[in-house]
Amino acid sequence: MNLYLIRHADAGDPKQWQGDDADRPLSDLGRRQARALGEAFRRLGLTVGAVVTSPYVRTRQTAEEFLADGPAGVATLDSYLLTPGGLRRRRLSKEVAEPKADHVAVVGHNPELSAYLAWLIGAEEEAAAMEKGGAALVTFDNRPRKGAGRLAWVITPDWYMPAAE
Image (cartoon, rainbow, N blue to C red; front, side, top):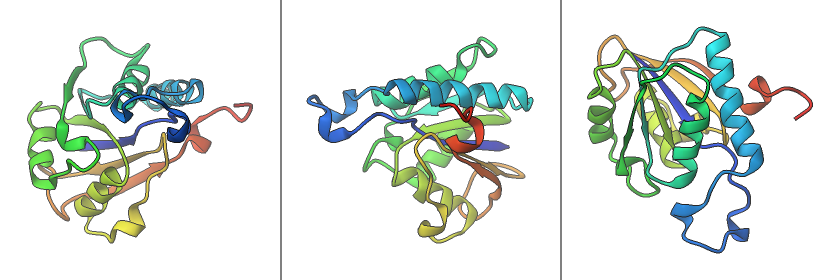
């Protein structure tokens, strides 16, 4: 299984947002980041059969932009285990394996997403910090579980965004 961990793209300064944090949307930059990440995946021939996302607006929007212009019919599932404070690593691993897809993307928040990445690869949490709009590929012989993953790569928006942006 290939598991793509994607931290939601830029959502602006949370101090400038007046509403509930769960409703905070992506900024224009964040929308461009998420779309560019999806375009980079397609250029490299990387496919996703399912997406598991936090129900927060900015993670859903990241997934939508990431999938835009890609193949139709990608299953998208919400998981409260990806919300801030909601991480339960073993339960999340079961959820991401449920779609029975060989290539699954998980879109979430920090510090939970970085903690999950570290748990999957058997690393210290500080060693697995993910940037907004960043992505990582963790591969497994079978299903995701503690320490069983192999970190293939980690990318940041600097890698996949055109220099002019």
